[in-house]
Length: 173
Image (cartoon, rainbow, N blue to C red):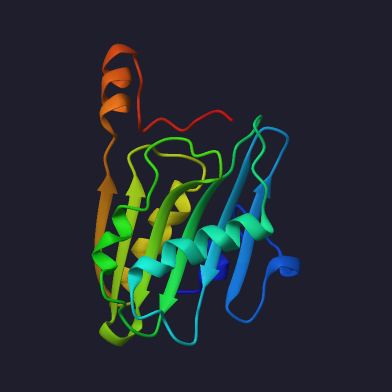
């Protein structure tokens, strides 16, 4: 599977904010801003707890969130080894808008084990089809794949119980 082939269907590569470890892909309009970061470090941090800080710092240094369109992003991490505490990767997915950028999903390729972990927020959005294609592609390539959905927090559960809302419907914006 070629990650770039999946990403280029909806996003444009941003060489100006890419380097030897990071590749950035973006879709930006007046009312929507979406990013996928591909991170391929030569050496993974020993502890997973450092990774969310690294990802958020990269997003903050390369992309700005605007109040009128927000910023949603996904992460593809191709790691040479498994960091301790990687099970926390689901915890870092946002369940609602984050003014610093909404982390919508992650795909963690753990090369030494031929395994992939996918974590997605409860709501489907513009980047969801990319996530689904990546997970299917990794599985087709013979990787062991496990996917997880981060459910709504208590406030969102309450609000969506009051209002008619289809979480699988694609947003119009």
